[in-house]
Image 1 (tube, rainbow, N blue to C red):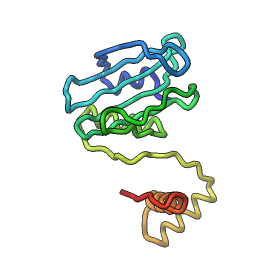
Image 2 (cartoon, helix red, strand yellow):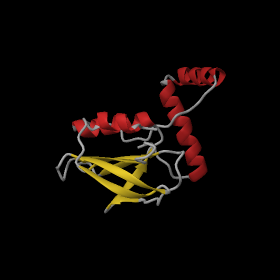
Image 3 (tube, one colour):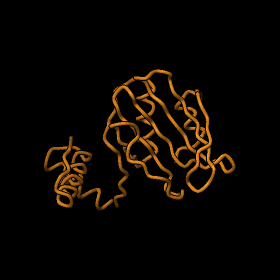
Image 4 (cartoon, rainbow, N blue to C red):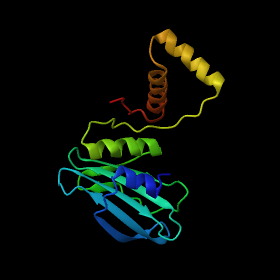
Length: 163
């Protein structure tokens, strides 16, 4: 999970607000870094001030109307809100690196990949089989894995597209 130090580095050590936060089974604290622009961004970190355990980090891109959050899987369930703000739903991320890359790009005002990255643990044998299949189709290994995941999701749900 993202640490307080990592969050501070992404925000360039800019904190604009701090509040008590009632959730995750404790009286937590939230820190916010907002650039002061309604079409800008804000980053938030919710943590336990006693243990320094980070419960959740959020990155809101107001310019593009996107909201990302990464929740520590080892923390108690909180009030799961679907909507970040009016008409914009939270996108739950799966990896620290994905949140950091999106947050850094949002802060810098750069374009970024809006897809959710997921970690996949493959054995050497599975990886070799996938590399051979990708080679046969003349595509990258990454594209091969993406195709397989979308095929599986479409089979299970019937409505997932790759856009």
